[in-house]
Length: 69
Image 1 (spheres, rainbow, N blue to C red):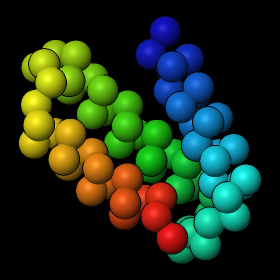
Image 2 (image 1 turned 180 degrees about the vertical axis):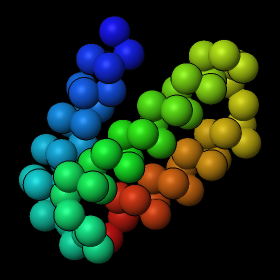
Image 3 (image 1 turned 90 degrees about the vertical axis):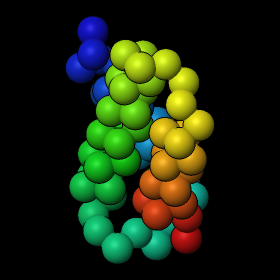
């Protein structure tokens, strides 16, 4: 089940990266795997430990680094 969920995240991100024609510094597949891994692990951590504002702020920083142009 976790692998399926991670694949859904990867599929969404790959489509997002492609549609928005982001100037990624690495291959789209690598960016997709890294971003999906970060999102997946933050979600897992949140499920285990509960919502934590520091974790959410960190997730936002990672989003900016990985996705912002």
